[in-house]
Image (tube, rainbow, N blue to C red; front, top):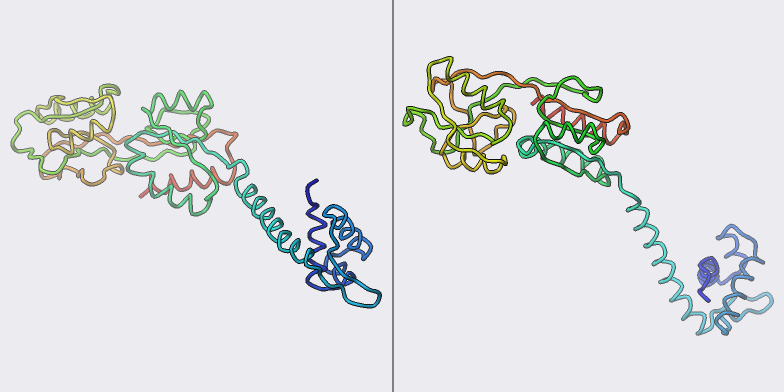
Length: 283
């Protein structure tokens, strides 16, 4: 039969005060309840735990001292178990969808600030193209989406306009190219069209010489100095840099970045995450 934790607490109280009445006062109960706890433990262990005489303070027997040592360890372990379980009770999870480019450039600072305020809330990040993220958001697979604007939607909570930048890697020499080499994703024609249309308008020639199905592959081409690409200016991070205006490349369209939030995810954690993402968008 397992030892009663309540009875063990009374055992420790009597051992520390050597008085059943003082132990009862400490435990906010009556003396008869404490006596019953000690009697129960003596019955369960088959040992006398205290020597006690009328009008004298209680004295622990050797068996009582041994059980007190175990009781302290048992109660400490019980407290540790409760603390652990309460600290890990069904953590709040927010599913955030964004593009790889935005995740690399804008999420780190927002996530650091969020974690400082809500350390027990988990954020699951799903990266994909904006159009696919919109489908996932509409289907209820995401609580928050941060991406290129996908138009009016009941869940759209913020829109920020940002300029596009001609992005180059270290060592890229624009002057050495008669036809400007460009790198873009295989899918998603908008940025490719913006770049080629802008070059056509100013009489410059450009050609898509490198392509990748994934933004990491695209970035590798640009970092290698093999081609230029076009990305939102606020997502431009080292080692990539913007081609200076003196190079003569044409200005590009502005684009909109948007935050989407489901109506069901309006708790303080989600609101704070939205706030931190909006802060990064406005830098």
